[in-house]
Amino acid sequence: MSPDKMVRMANQIATFFKTQPGADAAAKVRDHITDYWEPRMRQQLCDYVSAGGEGLDAVVVSAVHSLSPDVSA
Image (cartoon, rainbow, N blue to C red):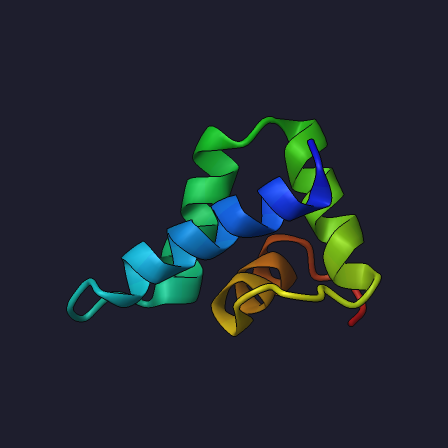
């Protein structure tokens, strides 16, 4: 998937979960990505965050760090 599309999709997920009352948005984003994104997409997102994560919402970056603690960014 193109990086632009991946960033757009991940940010849309974050935007949705940030509007939910009482929800830990990063945990909800992590759970959504785990449940609905295929492994290659998750790995691409982790790699993108490791490379700097340009354009990603901070909630997505936090979710990726909890998804894959070895991601360095």
